[in-house]
Length: 326
Image (cartoon, rainbow, N blue to C red; front, side):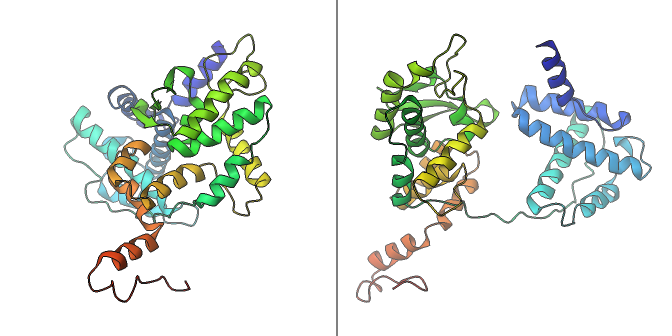
């Protein structure tokens, strides 16, 4: 246990050249204490800043006080290679911007050396989703009466019903669920809490699992995790991904069903059904509405149908159709 703690602490520490590392570590500590940023996000920023610091040292700079706009621009330019996707390069620049502002605020540095920098804008991909029929096939593929089948059915129903992230679903505990009230208390990114509804079918499947499935998986050291593995411990994100893939194959789905497919389908189907975008944002736990707006591009035919149905100049002719539709 002590060794595991030492290893975790080492994982949290900057590996940048010594003259740069102290400021990086102070910045990461601020993110943890004041902003509650998730550990995985802090680790990504640490790697990005360690990389930047090593680059600046190779250019002859001794510490952050010597970094100027030209040096920062050179680092950003070095990321413009096929080795880095635009999203990765943009994240690295974000980390450097945040550190620069921290240095101005905490260290009294007179200028923000990233103020004039521009970086690549990541192209936002439309998430892969399943149709309602495909979701039905996937969920009902877990149709057995044994403990693992009951667990998988509850897991898939809850995944689609509430639109949780994979990590949130894997981390769910008994205390977070109120099936009678029909909601879950979720602790998402940055440990921010939100309340997410649970649909009737998901609530029924979860109740069935709690009564007839989970008790069979409980072991002496089982904690309060909702979904258990065969050792009685909580499911990992990898195990959850494997469960989704297994039942996608059983359902005969030809798509490459990725772990977040049910979360994306949840949002898309709600939007298609007429749900308010702000409500979907709240349920998904998105801080910025622009993150949620990507789902508006998934079902363009719905918008065309609405225009064709309600615009006065379209009623007689009927709704327009997308190219290739009959």
